[in-house]
Length: 188
Image (tube, rainbow, N blue to C red; front, side, top):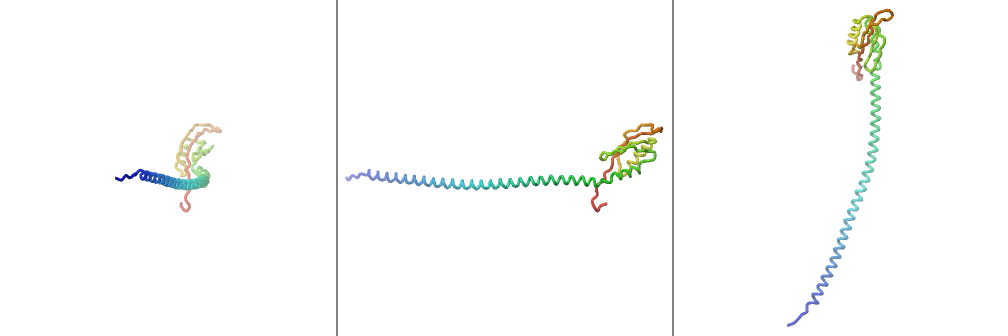
């Protein structure tokens, strides 16, 4: 029988497999490093792009906030101007109110009534004076209530007083003035 020694052949195969293993291990390491580098590069690029987008958005938000503050200032100015306009319109609508009030009082005050003071606070008017009798005070209040300019007359006080040797009734009446609303142009 022939004896063949297979040990060197096996040893050579082992060396070849070991060398193949080391080469494959190196290739896999290089491939892993390349994949890691590519992944890192992609992620870094995406992060840089996102940071640029964030910076752009921050700049835009800052400019929009500035515009919003300017808009708020303009709105405050507009509201101030509108309130001034309303005050002017109210004054314009009621500028002849005093003339109408005195004209109406001249029409409504009956004989025997002497007005001493007239005080207006907003729409409230306080009349005080002297009357020859309580019936004339009642007539005055009825006339004021029937007036288109005045309403809600209330007797605050009445008392007997002697003025220049005559016995008169002192009175105080509150009434409310009916505010005229401004009509739109073209309407009557």
